[in-house]
Length: 481
Image 1 (cartoon, rainbow, N blue to C red):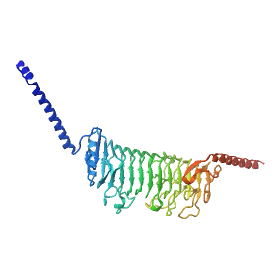
Image 2: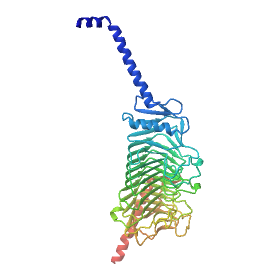
Image 3: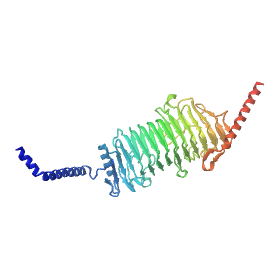
Image 4: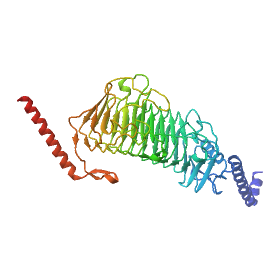
């Protein structure tokens, strides 16, 4: 029997080989068909990316209506298949959405610079419904959104008010390890990126233009960084952190346009209930803002000193900030309610009201008491250049100083080695210094905002210091004799 079987194999080995090949081919074909049926219409990519397009070249293809459906299908596939990491939006194409895009854990949503996600005309979404958010309302992690454009289509959705929570572009709650970078976000009703109760958030290399609220808003978050962003404010702040800690806002360019009759601070740091005692704001250029350049405010129930301190604001350039003619809390840096704030090595040129001010708004639109409840708040101001301060547009009397303290019973300035020059009303109001200098800083090119100092300024500063010391020595001699 064994001999017959071996003879049969020898005589029919070619037929058997062909049959095996056909069987393998059919199995492979079946797997492919089942894959197509399962992923409809996805063709499995080889580089761990799923492509969405509008010209038929993608794994999912959109037609310009309800395009969030195909984008969400691609994101669902990536979420369910761990080897895949990325959904890529091909451009040039405008993806019009009528509902929210949902992204899952450990996912990259990226696109060509010519790929645009656009809110449809007349969307009529309820407040709080974002354009992009997480699949799980309890929070997600490991998400990157980068490289494409989000168009908020404000002018075709004017039935909704700016700043009331409509059409926030990206929103995450209870999430961690989030990156949003190299995006162009513009013409919206709400925030660019809004995160709450989250940690390890990075927002960088973005261009943000004419949004209806904050460019980036972190609420009750930890470990938040924003850098290298170019932000033009329309309604509220460029960068904002409320009750958040371990914050670094640096190397950003922030401005707003006066003729929009809107806008608040360039950078805003708030403390109302949580600990805020590790914040750095540095190397930013902030100019022509409608509200303060930087607004630092603590309010709410009484709190411990250790819960509102260690705010370091340094190496920033602020010019022409505080243009709003309808509010009084404008200036370079407006602050209240924080202990031992250190403001150093900044340049203030031509700001309205004063370069640095202790004050808080007596009333604002949201009708919250913003007064600090404690005492002993101290702000250390040293090695800054403060020049050409202008009078406030609203109630200009008594404004135009270098430094103003409207809260002398609870707040104190410590002024050390600042350089002041040509401030419209003078040097200080309810503050004083024995170590500041008063001379022209001799900028390289003030007109074009080149605030480097010419070599001569060092010589003149040394001369002024020697003259100051000579006068102090003479006073001591007079007292002794």
